[in-house]
Length: 460
Image (cartoon, rainbow, N blue to C red; front, top):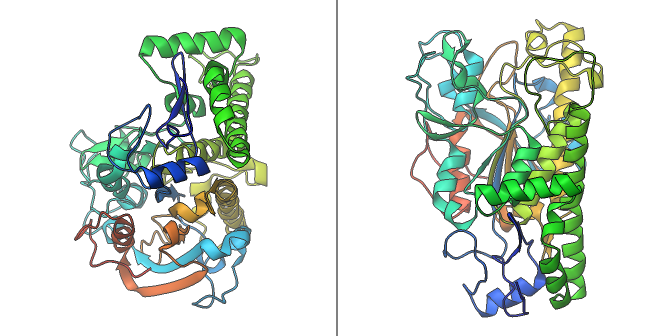
């Protein structure tokens, strides 16, 4: 492909056999698109208009609630002190809003008996009471991420990305008569259609940067593995041609972006090789590939790939639960050998509470890593973090009580200058979490009269 200074737009891609690498926002693009709106080359997706610096939406989830006294700031306003669990977010205070008092009423039993983990997970983005069944007749509601994807997903190659760390399930009895589909799926395309999440970083990476027919992608993958090459090697000619057309600032930005792609590739390859290394035990099952054994590396790889997808405007909507609700994973890397779910039923035992605090803080540290990566990506005179609306939280307040009011909710990012940060806000008792999503829809330019059990648009 031959590039010229008048053809490089946000839709320009670098192409090679079975490969398409989208570009980050460059200064040259802004000048061209300001002068000639809609002009594009090698477009991916539809011909609908794009903004220069779009607002992205990200939804992160953690299971089993938190230790609320060490999560909730003691004062409202802007001069609050970050409590122990949230202290890793201090570098991002100006982007951080802590929302207290938000509620998931439809995660409460409401006559359906036990099953709080299934309901918490299923209602966090839907605000709808899931039908209590472990059969095929599941029903809950469309999730907020999918409402957004339906409105703006035609502007990107992927309307949304559904990622995860723990595997999803579509059937079985996982929580007191509730289908595993509720507890192990976070995003719902429609009321009876959960979106399966991808937990293998290698598969996500190949999906994002593979192009062409399935046969072409398989050929490209075989070629890379045969010659131990990067995706970038397949688009080397386009990279060279494009580099000559860019100014110094854009050349530097392109180099940083391509370096980030190569580093992610190398980490995925290392994880695959490590996973496939010889062990004394040989299970009679195919080994998974691309999923690191190390949990920290797994989460951070998913965060890095998410940043690349947002940076290249391949998608503007991402969901990434750090674990399924009710997860009993242990966190030996931080000295917690007990299962998370078991510990969450702490009975106010001081030893158990301290272990839960460590898990809560561990998750916040991974969030801080994600935010640092978003902040490192420049878009004109702003960063990706300035262009994000990120919701982080749990559908349970205190794991011991299994309450669904006073939830631990963070709202992070500049939303393109539309949201002020650095605040702790306490809302009226039982304010629906869905009211927050109505506010997000409004900021994105796709307002909706109601969503789930909303009662109005949250003032943020």
